[in-house]
Length: 375
Image 1 (spheres, rainbow, N blue to C red):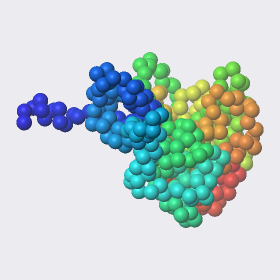
Image 2: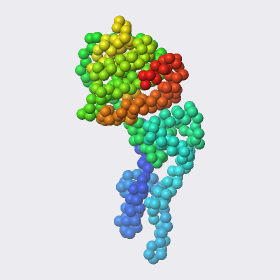
Image 3: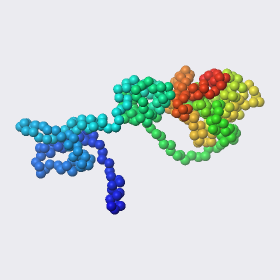
Image 4: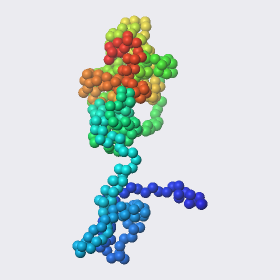
């Protein structure tokens, strides 16, 4: 066998599956052939070219849909029926692979649809919850299988567009940007303690803001997330200013006391946004003038991955407050509900536990009480 023949074998073109529309074309062409003289009839090769399939596929399809009918003289003749062929195709398709696991398990289907549509859970969160807390349903499937069922539209009320990322995987484009001038004051992230870098202990936070849409007002959200347990705090701000950030941190220090505040917020990592630029002012305690209440560290410009937990937290918030919406339309109670939902959402990186469960099992009661006060 020469190289050319080998190439032709290894790269053989895969033939497509015929649709019902293709079968209707075959039926019409066959009917036309029946009334034409033999010398003017279309050949099978020409017919296959029109349909866009292989010659062998056409012959198999003609056998699949072969039916015997009678003409107006009551004489029998053989032809092709698109409906008969489609029924046979559908019957054969049901025999491919294992039986659909969620078939007739209506309770499981209803549970999945409720979690996705009403509670905004992802398929992975649903499966994690069932694995951890026990599965009361007959259906036992993996996360990938559940995604497959949704993609194939086996659910009546849920499609891929109802999922948090709507089935889209975004590829980040590399942008050419001008180097940003580094702030002349404040501690760089490279000087952050090892315990914060490696997520070794509670008390090291990331902080950022979530803006309203353009021309929809100045209200925004201040978000904080603990790097180890992913416990989240969300506060509604009147505007995206340092004054508003100060107001929140000052109120937390008054609520907790400087000592408890310092134990709860050992370090806070922020970006170079204007609302965070005066680190000395943010670190300064309102009760102990000569002692800082926390330590602020700055990410490098255009390095949002250095606050990856914060960015992921924002994708969860966007399930309830889509981009472009005015945050002023959402009450403080609504913001609190979103925060509680995030803290009680199962996560794969926490071994299927929630942030709240991790906090309750690993943090001492005094710090737990502090967090509940913050919340």
